Length: 168
Figure (cartoon, rainbow, N blue to C red):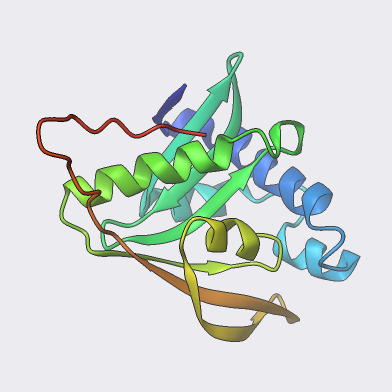
């Protein structure tokens, strides 16, 4: 089930993010990079402030948050993370698809994000293209990431048919 984020979700979202970075990014980022990116324990006050300025959806499986996406109305995807327990099960695809559909209905013409080394293939599979390779500093530690964009285009309608997108 995908639903809107609630303030009471902040701890679960922050812990999911931290777990995801430390468990799923290990082959792409070293321990010092993961520690700078996702400090343990997470700062819940910082997370509360960050999420207050974003639209966020969470995916629940069996009553637990399995993933989340945070975005802006202009089409910028700021955060997209899946729990290590639920990785590669279509959670991120479902969240991204939900946001794409909503923003397309609202008239947003393109999506953008800054993808990690881990996330780049996911976004490329969804039609995003790299516009710039970036080197950024987080808590004094250097990271490589990719600025990516994707135009939002309504699917063509066949005469006399109704279109119903499927979700992975």
